[in-house]
Length: 88
Image (cartoon, rainbow, N blue to C red; front, side, top):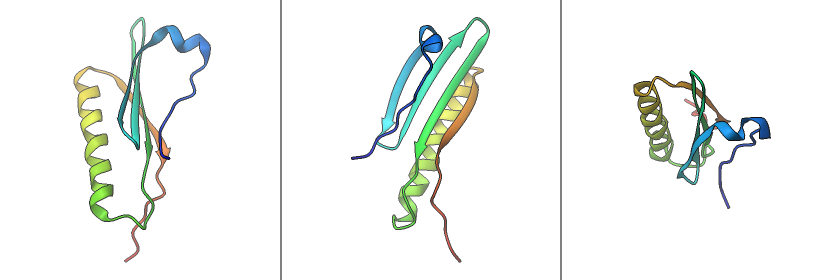
């Protein structure tokens, strides 16, 4: 089925604080190393065949994660498959 994951080099494993699967299309990992606070966000967007509301749900979830990360003074990196597009 669907899913999001991260491949993290073993030297970074001691710094992983938390992994969260937000839903079947979004996950995040929090890393801490001395003063470095990092949040990695992985997203797998639905393709153009899905309804716009599902895409907006993705944007809302990512926005919530970013707001949370900023409040914790984390550096945020978002990566994923952003294949959705809308033709006018």
